[in-house]
Length: 279
Picture 1 (cartoon, rainbow, N blue to C red):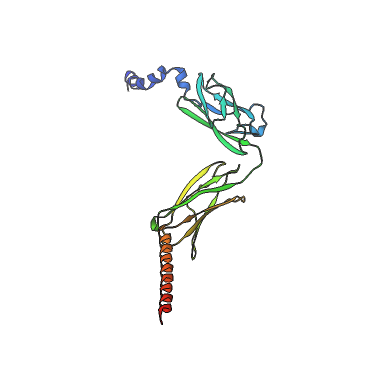
Picture 2: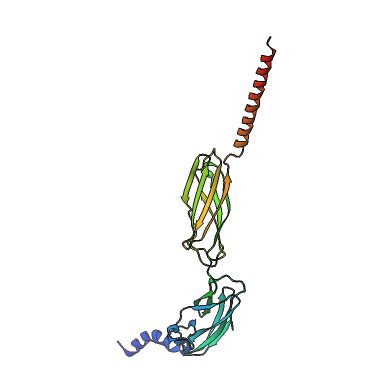
């Protein structure tokens, strides 16, 4: 192949590489990273992948985010946090080539916060890359497990009956409640089953609004429907509600009974009067 022909073929391939600025070619190197700063922490805490802070309600906790730029040109990284308690010293940090920048952050735990774990996230983004660093804040205090069952009600009749209720975590620890539905009528128990679609975990203060169809609900009965919630650590709660599928039935039966009694009494009076009237 002649030299000029080979050069003509290679030129479209080589020329774009030669024309790309050095700074742009450096972008192909390792990307920037963001993680909790190691600082003077012990070796066991080096290379942390998440923030973990612990303190009492009302405390202000501090840490640092380390943003590392291994490239050959400066980078600007945008920062923000989710969770409400986290404040970053800046919303934008410039990192020189082949160095790192450490950004202080504080976590302010509101007074009166119940003990337990609370989550947030520090988010760093730039040049098409996003890094999310989890934040876990453990609020000190006695662990309390407590549940409540509220607003039990039954709507519809027959195959359209639905049991609705709410389960609330009133304690300071995450709970995995188990819920049982029961119903008793005039002639004994007519329902006992585990509830469906109960959350696998319920955070402190969280409320789960639940409902379940009851296609086998009796049509002619006076019922007491109970909802019981329990957790593995001993938390227990129960609530119930009355359910009359046909609310007009019992007043009608009572009225019919009263009419029958009145008719019987009137008939007895009339028969007694006739006996007295005989010679």
